[in-house]
Image 1 (cartoon, rainbow, N blue to C red):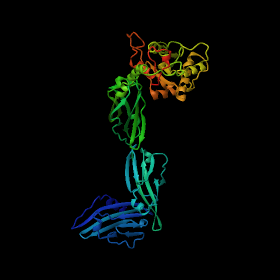
Image 2: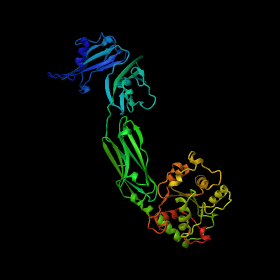
Image 3: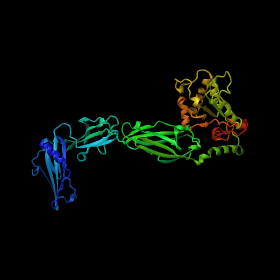
Image 4: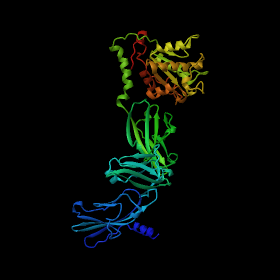
Length: 543
């Protein structure tokens, strides 16, 4: 008991510095080690090595180390080969210089137990990451082929999974997203050879996990202040990344959202925000949110688009702005102007064998749906009567008694475009319990027709690459989750055109033919001069 009290008393002594003449006494170091392992005591020298003259080691004041079994003096280093309980006690090293001397004292406590005694203590907050070092650089320098094994509470460390990772440079264990199960004593056991004999050396660390959560303010990492060039009318996806915090519960206590020109995206129909994706990292928890703009409209250009990350400590905001590309701003007008001039400066092209400029497909119903009204009334009024296009409109131009499968396939092969008209009503599947890709009709009911039209056309467009698809969305947002996956693909790849019913008071449901929607639709259609003849109908391009 008295010896233990004495050791603790020495451990509390941080620094004893006595000056008399040129003699100095350094700090008292206390080492708790385990018996049976290689160990070194190093006489620290804070002066230049070249000025050192002699180093003398003693034990218990004046006792020399010549008769101490298992202990060797090698210059300024005292080697224990290996440690034994008989090595308990006090050690002193004295470095003598021409102008004075330096003295250091050590207390060595050798534990006979099977488990190594911790040499250091570390604390990590729950949810954070920590590193446990194998502080045996000197031993590793003696034998480059030394082998290291890691133990936790005297049992081999289970490194399965990604929560405990062994790293080589330097030798250490990385604990990711610490939990209470990570608490314990970690030991690195170094097995090495020295002058033909095998030894082991250890270093143990007591790791404690603080259960209290560490709250950190969120930070948006991207965007900070970004400007993105976009093409008006196109689809754009904006990604926001943010640091949300650390520890368990961070996901439930944090969230991300977007605003456009000060308005929350929930109040803007053309926008959709995906659920925040949580990304655990060694430094904490990160989130990623995606804002999908189905159509870049003028009201989205040159205004503040903000990504906001929030938790209990506060919030952080990242800003970005969309600006129109100058070359894209006039692209549609330039192409349409070129088409108007094209017949005057170029020769006629040979017929391409196509009969129709576009095959128009939409969801048929028992009543007149918005999509059907647009396909049967609005679209022909502008494209056929005003601009001379030849359309095959499903439900209008097919003949009674025709074999729907063969006729549809053949008609689409003789069309230059496939226009698919979708509305909010289009998202109601014909067979709710079936996968949308499996909804091929078995008979010729009107309800089955649009699904078969679209299946044939999408097959030609995606597989045979012979038919270009134009998606038209009618009066608002379309839910694609109940529609075929191929429509998802086309929507993501090239976007869709949006047509809106004119507000009350406007005389024509077609709106102005030179409006943005009709310009973009004509841009996606093959070349067809207004009022063209049958010969001119075969003069088309792929612009």
